[in-house]
Image (cartoon, rainbow over all chains, first blue to last red; front, top):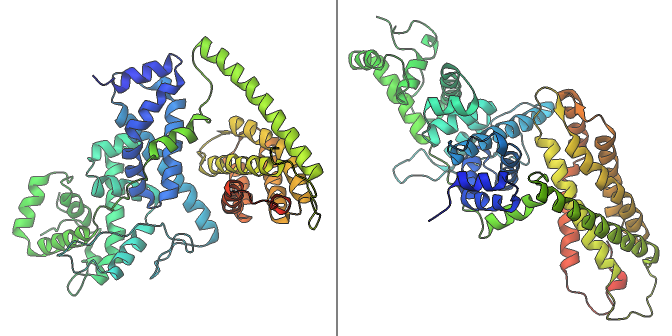
Length: 209
Length: 254
């Protein structure tokens, strides 16, 4: 029978530092996937996976053994990534502002680098040009919007999970997702073909109550 | 008739709108809002989940090996005691390594200088230093990454990073001198730059403000230090791994 994560944590807390390796073996791939979706860069992701486990180890005494270790680790990973994206954005803003470019290249320009999106067979709009536009548009989001949008849209996490992970009120989590979508629409709808423009002027006006 | 707001439509797409049944009823009755909803739907459907590459085989092993040395020594009494012994062993090994680096620096042949004798059974001191410098650059890279990624909210405690910077600073000077003597200006220049940043970290206060942290980050970024440490570190490591050709050791630069 496999030893539970909680039992391994207890073993580490009792002084067996090397037992932490079991947790690294079990969870590093899933944490890699979570972080990669937010950074889009393999090298940054590998470093952030290490940072996540390091932070988890240092905070292990605060982990409640009845809680789910993978959820706890996921929260650390997301917050660590958010800090990383914020630091990177601050650095980039000292040089220039974000701009959509035709050929985004995170190393060369002030874009958040994203991996290539896989086109579905029935998605005519997912041309390479459109993928570049999407990458560029995602690069315009603030780190918090980017993380909230990734969690909601790409991982299908609930607003409750997002708010708990990012330590936000539910209304703030919803607002981050909405602002992200709003920015993405502004960037992408002009390329989505005729008749696709938003109602624009009416937004922010009266709403159904 | 009031229309749905953009926020209501977007949140409805994800099933997160307040008063969902009211929104549904409105959409059923209002062609304009329905059209808007389908525009939102069409845009968001284009943004598919990212395809995540599978990490290379041995990823877990590599993660653990890189992590293990960075884990703080905490835990039971026995573990702390054992940790102390490890620290002494590490200090001894470090002293030996530094002595080897010093000797290699002193006796390193200048460019153009011929070596007339070399005993094949002896460990090549140049290779020892190459390995040591590679390791030094790798540790420095990890430290710089930690500084670049440190939380920048409120007062920031950098005491563990400072302790690491102090250790690195001690050996950095020796390696810089050795590489200068070995006629390797590229590595010497890098170590010189690195030394200045390490000194800034090591000698600063242990608790810094976000502004102070930003200043250190700015120094690292403006000099492209992290990138240089990565590139030159990997070059040094690959030179250290390269098989030694007979008679080539004399001219192997750092």
